[in-house]
Length: 75
Image (cartoon, rainbow, N blue to C red):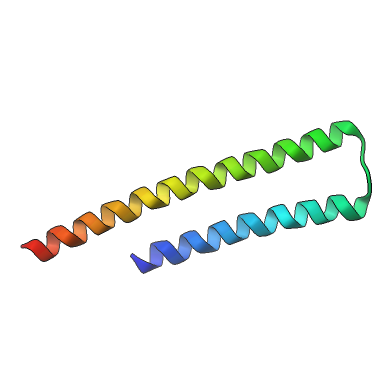
């Protein structure tokens, strides 16, 4: 179970790092046009939504593993 949690943590941290890098590049690049800003915002929203779904799936896997472990100890 620890492997799943550690793997999830790595994925979430990688996603957060990607968002920070994207925002940093945008800040250094300066003010872009509105179309680029809209695309950047959409990309960040999609990344956030994907990470949220990933978090839900990981929680579901943790629940399944926890239930299996409890069943194994009950036998």
